[in-house]
Image 1 (cartoon, each protein chain N blue to C red):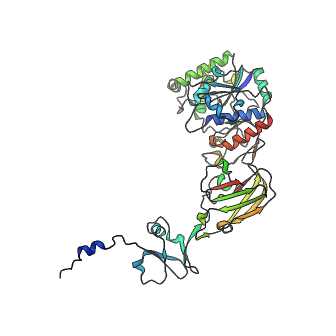
Image 2: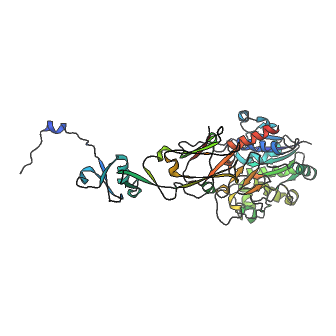
Image 3: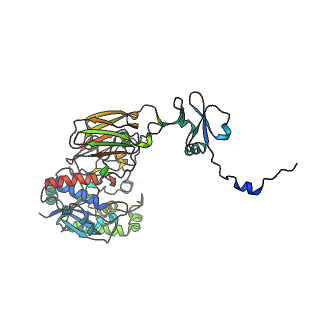
Length: 197
Length: 280
């Protein structure tokens, strides 16, 4: 039987680039099963819509499916961020001196340590890129050593912060500080900056 | 007494040798006694010195551009404005006063080049990882990074003339004298060592002295049980506001040949400047 052809004028009016919506399907515990276009999961119950960028990065292998999970109570896709993003190889990774902004070319730092000399406080903050739906995977304690200027052998204060403390907020410490000092830490992130306000 | 330190640098796209020479000159001004702290700089672009915050640390700025890179140091005897000179590599720092040793050299030597260097932990370097040419060819183990000479010395003149000739004719001398292990480049160290051997003055210009105990920060000669690309991958470099330097947790007291050119950055220079301004 011969197939009836659509009228050309009607066919040409049809939208050519239909937007594809992507959905992630998941188990009851929130673990992801897969990422699919909407028409492929029409009958699936456990699914949520995800943004194109994330979907494409997962389907093309740029990101790992298991780097994400669904936060069941909020029904949001969250990224599991491996806590240490920096490999510890050199002494500068294990005992990293946070360089003052005026001596550094670092743009877009991951961690900023602000020194308020007037009130003698140190405030720690994290880049906003880590504040969006990230769950830190593993032990998240960061130790900061406040030492004599450029000499980690002379320890003045030791500060402990958990990543979650500064993911969306800042954390301040009122400390008795000398005029000049340095801050050292185990290098968990790539880029740290010290600034005086 | 007419004495001074000589630093020879040339423009380089990757490394700011003027900054290194400036830091070295500041460290000399900060640590040596008046009269023992004169510094002459030989540079191909002397106008760049005017951009420094304290150009006065160079007592003489000499324009010279006949050679590039380290070959320039082999002309030290003809470039120095001093009667008695110590020529230094630019990537070095002085950490305490050594003036009394200058009196010794002036009194006792026409030409002196040390043959020992030390790890950052104070151990004598015996590893020949970078000096196979010296050991295989039985050359005197000279470190030209610290070279004392008298301007009027015939011995020094003959030594430097031959050294320059060797640098200009590397194949001729490599084939004849360095056949057991030819260096990729016949640099100042190799040329000076060969010059001393040919003139048979190795024992005259280099013998055991308690100075200079230069700390040489090339990574493979630090008596470590592992291979390394840089010393600072394994031991931190900590220069404080009093001008004291720790490498790892070893306090440094001697001249440090830091090798890694990026160690002396703008922050270190600012500390050196601050010390100099407070002292002078």
